[in-house]
Image (cartoon, rainbow, N blue to C red):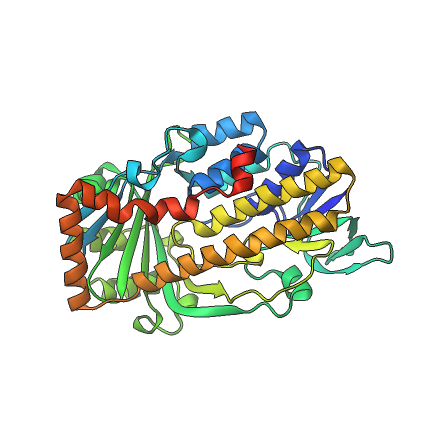
Length: 421
């Protein structure tokens, strides 16, 4: 069996590592001219789903490097826009099995993670390869075409080419992407002595949501690596209903984005408003939240898809990245078994897609609901939520009972993941 992967992102590279580890020949084609050609964005939250996948797919030295370069996930706090702390959910509630490395949660730098995932793939990772189409040959194999005239043939073709997947558009043209009416502006605030002194301690650790009681929220997350791989910083993602920001938000430059955000947070705590204004200008980035509509049914073939290419979701809680890693874990497992038993890979792809069509759309629904909640609300609703949070802060048993499933449910292992472990 020979596998062709379109896309050298987190999902595509994890799949390649899993296949290589199982002795399955694989080639990865990435449109970027070389490593580091694009900005990978901010830190990514790796939950137990992603940790299990990385442990299964990566060679042991690369897995150890991931553990050595990732920062702690931390607790999760809720604050008001005046920075009054409402409640903090402990890690032991979020991920009760976190003592085991594959059951914990981590803050990983995206660029570092992609570098680790590419370890040892130099001979099979082809840069500057822009996919333009594919066709199935008479013998059942698949031929992919690239913009520079190259062709690649394999028994299996996997589209891991992200939200705008060309492969998905050709293979599954009925899949629809919906606009959720929610937008986000991301910021990277360097955690210097100055910023640490200006902000409350709660915002300089773990993850938090700041809510103002109207359709605007701020998600914050600290990236504090245990080594000197990167400077520590605070990710700040302002999430708002789209109609509260300029209609041309996605085309605004750094300064215009700063002004647009500052208008929305004008009544927030001055320290938080100042931190957003002083964020690294080049890291301000606006995106519109989109999600894959309910998937139509299709029959398996030698072509399949993973990650954002098939279940695009808002970047909330790291669900998109972790689901892509779960896809890679499962697909590598199924294809490796077919390769070992000399079975038709289409049956392996069918088994992968049957499971993926359950957990993938479930993650999309969860991420879309969380995004909608972050961009909704009013004064009365906010008063009720804050009262509830303060009660949970005062009563540990109630806090554990109320929040026990919020993080554990999306990260719960499926049967095959338990078997793999």
